[in-house]
Length: 312
Image 1 (tube, one colour):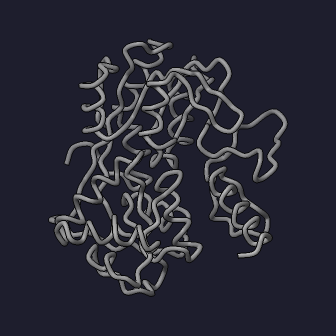
Image 2: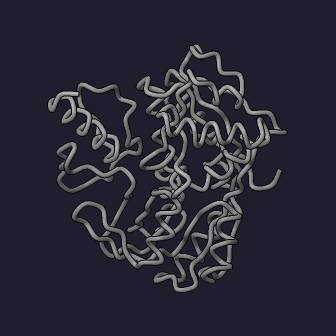
């Protein structure tokens, strides 16, 4: 590859990582949430643009660390919360991978480029099992609320050009897979459990070891919302995702993708839990937000984006 091509490839990668939309690029690149109003708008892609930090970073009245796969819900959710509790107008939300958010809590800060964020969360959301594991290790949480569920699905390009019928097809040598990185993505463990249900350890080994080694399985560098982009850009043929990722791209944004359903006996359904931090800097706001997450209004917002209710 020439030096020029390498520079272009790096710029494209940075653009995706930062959530940048170039005028010459299709409009499916993130961020998809509308930006805050007021103030001067300044973004110089790929150097000054951020997709996973939302709202007011200075003196927030509530700080929420959301598992990254709920990025599409954040705008509607925060606006509804502000309307119900008008005393809280400065809200800061992060939608980074949950493993990164947990490390941010452990270390006390996040460094993104030249920016250091030392805010402590009032609320942390993650899969129910991960919340229980973190509580066992660190005793971080005062109380919790389950608020949504989500099964897995396979996303493919419109027309399904590689004729993907199920998880076993992801082990084929001719199928390029986009896979969440197990280092920081809880969904990876659940997808691997589904691989083993569909084809035993041999299928899991093929996709997560052999195909990673030969380059036909790509492990995400940010989080699993990279996978829809790779499908849309023709870089991957198939991607195991939460069903809401496929729903958002197909039903909300009307992108040229399709969903391959994973049978119940091979599938894994996650339950999402919101946890109030014991040392929440804004204790009352945290209590109010946790109560809000259990409301029928929140259920309606999550249902709009394809999530299932917390109880079957």
